Amino acid sequence: MTLQTYEGGCHCGRLRFRVRGDLATTSECNCSICTMKGFLHLVVPRDQFDLIRGSDELTTYTFNTGVARHTFCRHCGIHSFYVPRSFPNGVSVNVRCLEGVDLAAIRPVPFDGRHWEDAMRTPNVVSGPGQVGA
Ligand SMILES: [Zn+2]
Image 1 (cartoon, protein in one colour):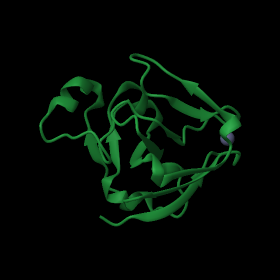
Image 2 (cartoon, rainbow, N blue to C red):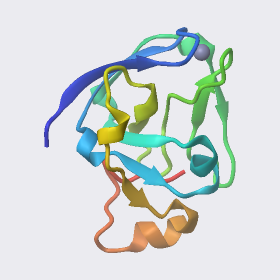
Image 3 (tube, rainbow, N blue to C red):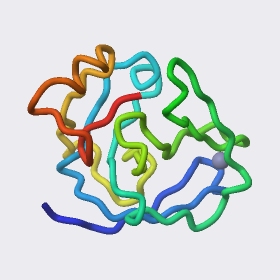
Image 4 (cartoon, helix red, strand yellow):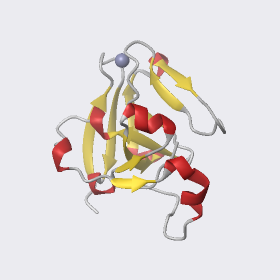
């Protein structure tokens, strides 16, 4: 577990944040919305995430159970972080929105968000960093 600090944000730059996390826990979810977005999840406890600026620029999309709050920039539309259903006390940051990350070197762990209830029941799947779902 190597915690490192990264900075990132949305495309237009109105949103900026800092996150401490381990990119080895990056996961990729096959649910309906993550598939379309290509979201690469880095899930961290909320105290490892700092929104530097842009809280007024966020808008929120919810669907299905409404637990996951899919926040995105209302100007450029980029979904750079949100609060996932599987870890409501944490934040999932889109690794694609972090600076200085070699995306080709990342080996995302698959998460079966398409069958969310089953995936969360599987004994070796814990709710926490590294495990996400819409
Ligand atoms: Zn933006």
